Image 1 (cartoon, rainbow, N blue to C red):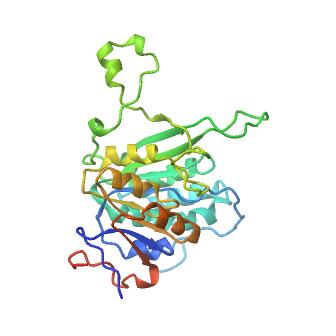
Image 2 (image 1 turned 45 degrees about the vertical axis):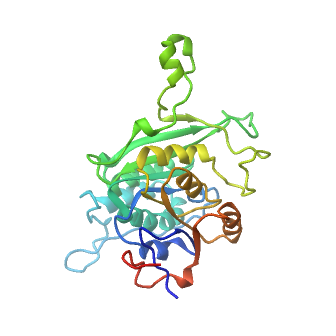
Image 3 (image 1 turned 180 degrees about the vertical axis):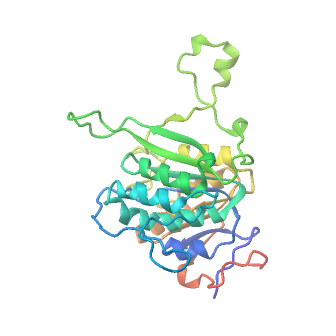
Length: 305
């Protein structure tokens, strides 16, 4: 049986390698794409380099100069950036085709949120500028928290980085009024009315991690707080829009989307993650699909379930 996805069907959790699944989804289908890939903490050195082929089919011995999606010399930038650190090759070779699919799958007014840490964000920023176009960069969000061990050899690292890119920087959807406001740090410096209303969050989000003993905890080791994903979904989508998370983990993006009246497609191949999501979405109208059931021709948006 082939899996069919259409706007009136159930929310989906798809089990399997996300790349072929992404390639089977229809272009422009998602208002928000959130990617929280495994952080590259143990990289292997690799010596190969990108080389171009000239128009006549002869090896030019220079970095490729094909244009990126926004008309930029994408491969040249890629080569220069990856040459800075050989260790990044393996990780980027894994992540790059998934980001290309994310660009294809975004609606014209859609937004990509790429969640990384300090080890990779500087590489990803340069390469996403080339892939999407530097004018498509909207924000670098700093999610700051205060929990966990503290080294005394350097400043303790207590933040993640979330890069925000729009498919069209002139037309992307953003609704500041829909975002949950937060308390002023110095409420005495504003009027009582403003203090009661709260302020719009900036690009620095102070939010605790999921408490090891809290009710939100699912037991998944890298679970992200619902509050972080809630803010993403509120700002960059409308009720009824579809949200995609290709590294779903514990399913927090889907939980936030469901709570806010959005639809979702989640993808993961980790059996532990899938078990957590089955428990988390029990009782909801969520369909779990094995990658082997996924239609080789891609989902049919017009089909009935």
